[in-house]
Image (cartoon, one colour):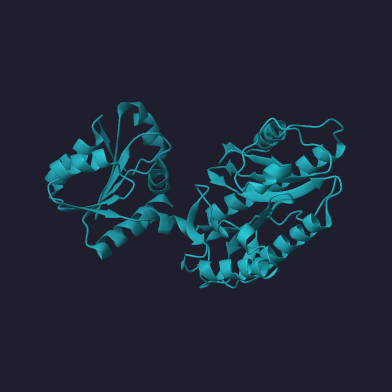
Length: 356
């Protein structure tokens, strides 16, 4: 699996007319090599692959990635330059997230030309292999268990909880289900906080007759889900109930348009058009979705500005939201696998409107 990914990158190298590629992003380093340590770089040439790190990881690397040529040092970029000199490498591609200081070192010491490249490995990562899809499906299944546990807790708990307490409860529940950790800070936003798209959980009590937005993602065997659900504690206004149904309608129409080849901007236009036509366009102030996988935000992008075409094997979120001050906020988010003929909803669990 890891070797096949490296082979694909080597093919890309040839197409881009580089003779080596420097990988510094930790997630990309793991994706290509399987090395789970927290420090080091990869240097990939047309025929060889080098993992450059320090002595702390020597035995770990022997187990995790025995097919890589190991260079042990504390001066990673110096080692890159020395290898380039030894191997007569003259054209280095590097990830555009490289720091200015590290670029400056390479510019002074690399014996050839340098060029920043954008999202080359990320494009490879966006199309999931069958084994990755199976892990992501499991990640989404346990997310469903987490949401149902939250509904059960809120339905049967007579004492009011704070947003933070509910957030911590879900975090703990997901760890017991096999998740290794959260991929972002779990959002619990109640009442007026629900009108903040990226609110953080606070010590505010979740009182009666209030709405709650729950946005969460957890890693399972390295891959993360990303789900949002909105529900209410007690009766809400007619306008809020209508907002919920509007967002759900927009989401379902967008999902139903997913096929290989469709552009992210077209999907955004479908859902956003429904919300705008209902008079709430100005209250939908973020993109329609994004890819997920080893990171919580990956390619492809799904938004007004993005012409990314979807390919089978990609997994994206669809997450329209409407946030009206004084009324409340609603977001519904699901994780969708693009298939050869359309789509498969991986987070296919309760999204009906609840007033608990």
